[in-house]
Amino acid sequence: MTTRLSRTELAARIAADIPEGSVVNLGIGAPTLVADYLAAGAEIILHTENGMLGMGPAPEPGRVDPDLVNAGKQAVTAVAGASFFHHADSFGMMRGGHLDVCVLGAFQVAENGDLANWSTGGEGAIPAVGGAMDLAIGARRVYVMTDLLTREGASKLVAACSYPLTGVGCVSRVYTDHAIFEVTGEGFAVREVFGDTTVDELRALTGLDLADATQKE
Amino acid sequence: MIDKRVASVTDAVAGIADGATVMIGGFGRAGQPVELIDALIEQGASDLVIVSNNAGNGDVGLAALIDRGRVRKIICSFPRQSDSWVFDRFFREGRIELELVPQGNLAERIRAAGAGIGAFYTPTGVGTLLAEGKEIREIDGRRYALEYPIFADVALISARRADRWGNLVYRGTARNFGPIMATAASTTVAQVDELVELGELDPETVVTPGIFVDRVVAVGERPWLRDGVFVGGVDLEGRPLS
Image 1 (cartoon, rainbow over the protein chains, first blue to last red):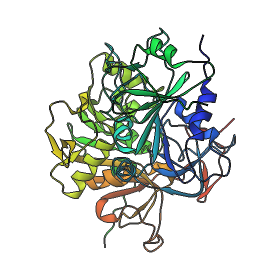
Image 2: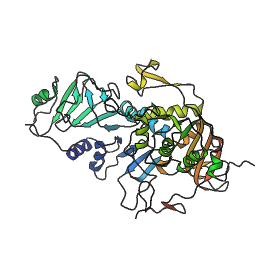
Image 3: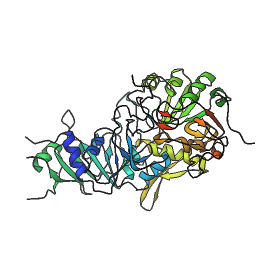
Image 4: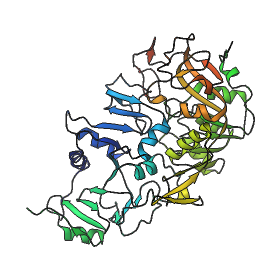
């Protein structure tokens, strides 16, 4: 039996890999949790697609400002040093390669770094893409935060995505509840396993030919 | 004398024709020009093509316009939200057409329209369903899709303050699409909290120069400010906390 990280433990693990000075965009949903675990006092600038650098935490009750929201339309604050800008500039920051890191959720990530995270292509589903495609191809490093397996037990790491793509060959690294995987250009390499998980177990769970890049003690 | 002030939101939306393409600013509820949309509902134009990031929230503003059956098509990036039940129903019933555009392409297509750019190549969406059928060009080893500008007959936006020349300043993330939509429409209408005298806006802080604005109308200070100072006491929809 493998040992899994909780959502918050995984968020903390991702935060530990984000160095001071980084400009970071955290996707809506679980990636938003990463903000809670960034090193205290470290100057890491959070970008939100709707036009702010220097996004701060949620406000105190009674201090909600409807003019200060994040990409998920939740109330946020502006830290000292924050700036506001319009949408074309905000997405120019992404597309122009100015963001150091983004953290996104995923339905599937393929061995070649393809990402599928905006649509399951289901009949009758209402499609919505938002800024996912811009972030996926724009940020210098694209980290995916996800469970390794779907509720049905299928691997989200795949040989090729069956869901509609968000971006081609864009993912740098995948942080899952079981292990961290690097996209290498020759498939996935296991960079770090959590608890007593083994690379062979991960190979069995994913059905993929995973390289072992774990640091041996 | 140049005077773009109009007396009421009714005057502000006068002349919008059936079948018009109307850009509506806002990201979710932030910066959504709700009073202008209400006036447009009252005004009666129908068969509209709406360009907006989202497809309405709750039962007000853009959602109310859709609910009246006045929108033929919407061009947006993120229609599906927790409170987009009006759009969801119209879409499922086949009563509204959707052109889904990645958010950065939406912004850049609007910007291009206002800046006189005929078309542009963007890497966003390449290799996905949303670039299907578009011209692809490889430039310096990277693949780009050709995207065309989006023009509008009218842009309805929201800002914090204006003067009678149409210079605008915004507030926080309510700025979002306002500055680019203002450039891309034949007629740009801005609702603002307050109109100020010429010279009261510091030219260094003007975000949208008046050249891009045709009509400005004051709708009163947003409830979470008092004399320009944030006082809070509201929920995310701007309603007073009980």
